[in-house]
Length: 176
Image (cartoon, rainbow, N blue to C red; front, side, top):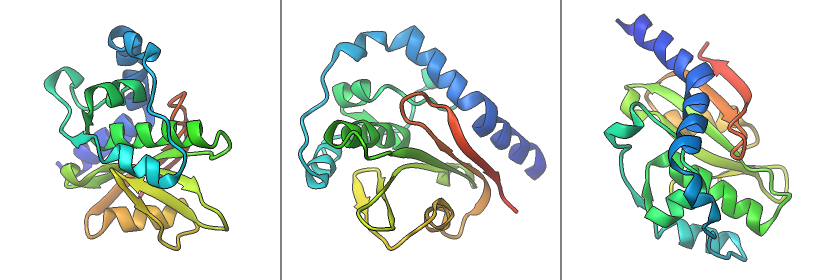
């Protein structure tokens, strides 16, 4: 059973998740694109805005999982970790267009521990990340280091790095 679940999670993250999210966005979320995101002038402002969003699980219409437009997340003021990450990325790009945020998703066992964060290069040679509404400023230099922090004691299946605007995969890795 473990290998079937692992194969499904790899398939989902590598091939289906972003296609499904783009499809759902086109079909159900186009009206949110006209909505404005709140103005931000600092990382503290971004963290404060993220603090106004409530964490909630995806509903049954999202089937397994989907990444909404950041405008929808802001409008509804609730989403899961994917919503926090995509909103953080949009606010970072709005504040500093050269910030280069990415979505970093870690698929774990148990599946309920899987998580998505918004990672971005910080001043200096570190990578910081928004973990839901919290800005993590640990001294990390690679995405792999972030993956290890996020996974904790859970078992890693796979992880990826994706563009928050196009939802195109930049990197994909299976657990060794």
